[in-house]
Length: 155
Image (cartoon, rainbow, N blue to C red):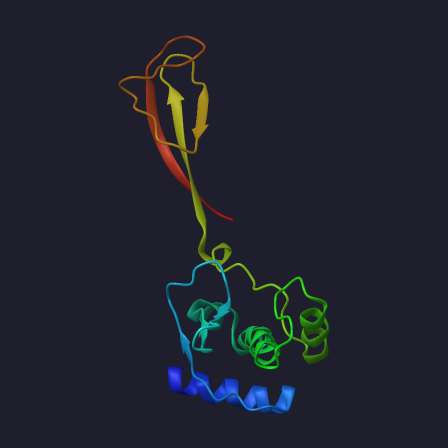
């Protein structure tokens, strides 16, 4: 989806759900990492995190658009438009927008567990951080540690 297609989608959602036109522009902003979108007060454009569309699809994208349009229309009407304000919460509930964006960092987060074994007593050590086997030894028998394998874990 291009920025022009996104702007047209925002205009369509604004007209259908709010009954008011969206006369500014919307674009994807790949620098957004932890938020679904952002409404800019200064020039009144909307930024959307492209990962929300790529990972979760159009349904979540429209929920985020509705959320940002609540900020947009309340601000243009001179009403309180922050997340904590009652007017914002009521309008968001009426149009069915998302209160919170899903976490895109969870979609592709992996952990690696490093496994070591003592060459003397056979004790297994599982560590998140790599060990310097030349410096560290077994805590039980002071034997030499050797690297066994890495285990990838999806979170």
